[in-house]
Length: 183
Image 1: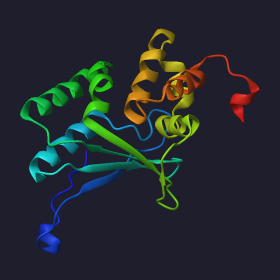
Image 2 (image 1 turned 90 degrees about the vertical axis):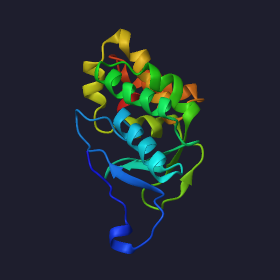
Image 3 (image 1 turned 180 degrees about the vertical axis):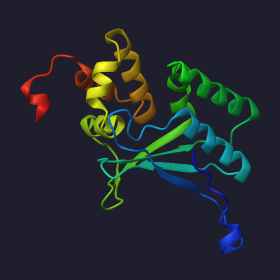
Image 4 (image 1 turned 90 degrees about the horizontal axis):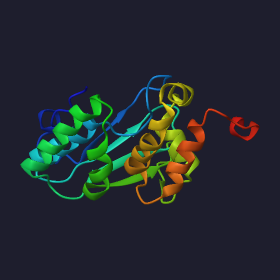
């Protein structure tokens, strides 16, 4: 975890708008999908700053930078619910995030090289960014009966209304891969 203190100490009076951070690339890390802790911190920052904050996640390999911003200031109950979601996520329970993230946040995606917003990224790009370098590890470690729920989580945290994201995710996690998956 990294703390992002107010800029006032260096630059005088400022207004905090958000943060950008990276998620490492590797076999055991999942790409740019925000964790429960990321989301809770964004909500807490929004409450402290009294304005919705934007948070962007990137790394040196992602095809997309993923950003999310809460739609409104969180209530104490909402903060508590997302704090509980962090605990639930430690036990592989993403139910609260699947059910509520799209209601509470908007997401957007950007090209890493140009910073240009991508309004309708392809599901393949979304899944590449969401998996990071962990595709093979995820394919092996997620049990077949858990893959659908995991892919629903990926869809909910990226483009909630595009079921093609979940379909692409399930295709990538399938044990049997065709020659076309390797291209």
